[in-house]
Length: 367
Ligand SMILES: *Cc1c(COP(=O)(O)O)cnc(C)c1O
Image (cartoon, rainbow, N blue to C red; front, side, top):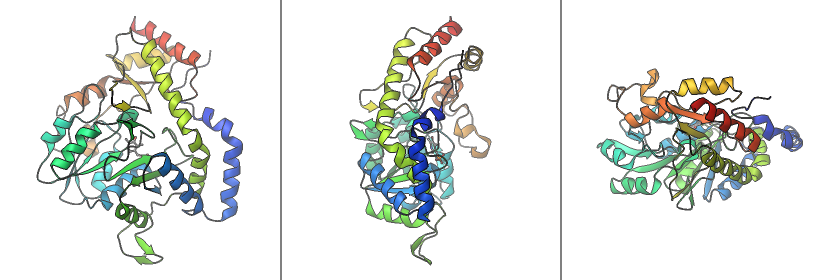
């Protein structure tokens, strides 16, 4: 029998191939390969879908995070409070602007930043909060916005895994000054290469981000700001425009499959992804927690089911990100999740038959 893959990008590309090839041809013939009309059209379409006034297409989610922090004026001497349970790009972006990542522990239930731990991590140097909507689960945005307001801090969202997720009915990315989305191929909306986007409702942040992504130019060869080469490729924008109209249906498919996993796995000795009444998560990943995680993963592999681990080592324990203020053991909840988390196969095209095989294999392994 075929294996159940952890993710199957081809399953999404195959039916769209004619449109993707037509988009390729359109861009090839346009002679406009960096920024330009395809990027502008994608920005407008994605911004409308996310109910934000401004959308700025860039070369990656990391670039979007970096520009959000730079446009917000975060810099050397500042601290930004973020989650240790994330992809390293979140902390890297903080360091790119010369600021210091300060971590706070996450909540057991959702794996996202705990508002009271955030408050305990504040110092006179804190400038911003950078919550991560881990696996497509929105962070505690209402509470964090309140913490930010009370202490006069900026709120910037790492929404790289959370396209179309909602909190209290409102799309993520609209709760603070700005937010970053990623279109890395495996994300819920994936390019055929690297791409990202910054959203904001602040005209000044949007204007700065537009200049900063293109070498800080206000007009050609006028470099008013110290910028970067973070332009979005027209080809990626054209691909993303083919895919964007399907995002809503793909998201519903992820949510439906996640609900079905909840039901199939409810009797097993593992912890399912947390649910909260205020959140509509979009399940970039469906991650359960299980003791002997590595062994379970291996045994599932032996039964033809491929799983992933996101993320095995929290950021504060990564060699390149160590800070003497946060030795191992500083964030017991995040560290516990990192030790036990196991991402099951989940992508919009996953069939119920495949899902049943995942559940059956898990049942056997955990028996
Ligand atoms: C993917 C990701 C990023 C970085 O996005 P890239 O497009 O790969 O640069 C940042 N933060 C989180 C949480 C991510 O998952």
